[in-house]
Image (tube, rainbow, N blue to C red; front, side):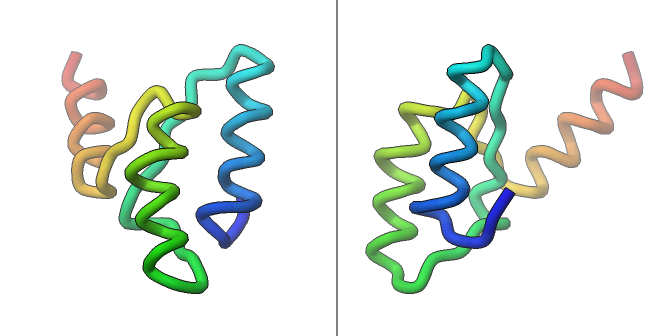
Length: 69
């Protein structure tokens, strides 16, 4: 999607939601130029635009769980 948490990733999330996609962000797989930008994205902005905010471990576990079904 992009590197920066608060610009290309947020833009992609907004567009995805507007197009009707289910969006998931891996909270430990995004970056920002400073901790404040990342904190704002994870704690405020992503909660508006994403359906799931998961760690990489949580995402992998969810994938493994869906294979078992």
